[in-house]
Amino acid sequence: MPSDLETSIENMIMVFHRYAEEDGDKNTLTKKELKKLLEMELSSFLKSQKDTETVNKIMKDLDSNKDGKVDFEEFVPLVVGLSIACEQMYKFHKQKPTKK
Amino acid sequence: MPSDLETSIENMIMVFHRYAEEDGDKNTLTKKELKKLLEMELSSFLKSQKDTETVNKIMKDLDSNKDGKVDFEEFVPLVVGLSIACEQMYKFHKQKPTKK
Image 1 (spheres, each protein chain N blue to C red):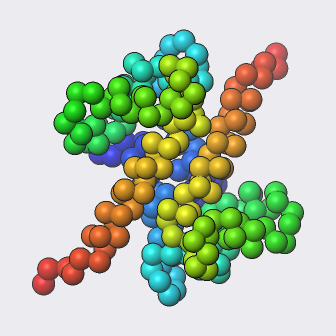
Image 2 (cartoon, rainbow over the protein chains, first blue to last red):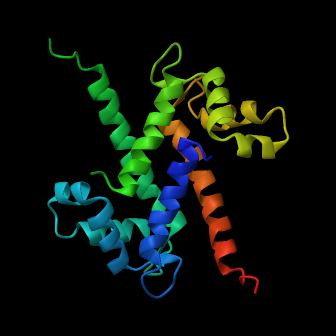
């Protein structure tokens, strides 16, 4: 039985490949595939950005070798950034005194 | 309903805090807590290392500010490294011709 952390890692890989395999190169995300991943998997994050250029900016940030595609190694920093932001929120809420 | 990727991120945070909260500072892993996390959550990885110094080496690598503890931001690179290695294996096995 995989552990929670192993399952978390496996899910991250499965999600990436679920969208990467839609068209063209099965191991990379096109901008269209990245857009769909963001809309389906990170909809609340995407809506919170209120910037129509968000997908373009994320694509530009992630595509470090500028080949117009995002491979898994280029995708992971997005997950890292979101995880760190979410963990900060978790700690903030944990420290807040619970209302009596 | 959180998406698969959101659940994956949430689980990563929950796992970290499950072990970080065992003693002392609730938001960081001591070496003892990191050892337990590795043994419980990444046992196959740990066993594959065959080096009794593995936990010490991982602790040294992760503890970038050298305060003797690992916070979440210092912990994430371990998950990143493992995810990238696992995704390489996933691609390798995906490309292997299936035996007739």
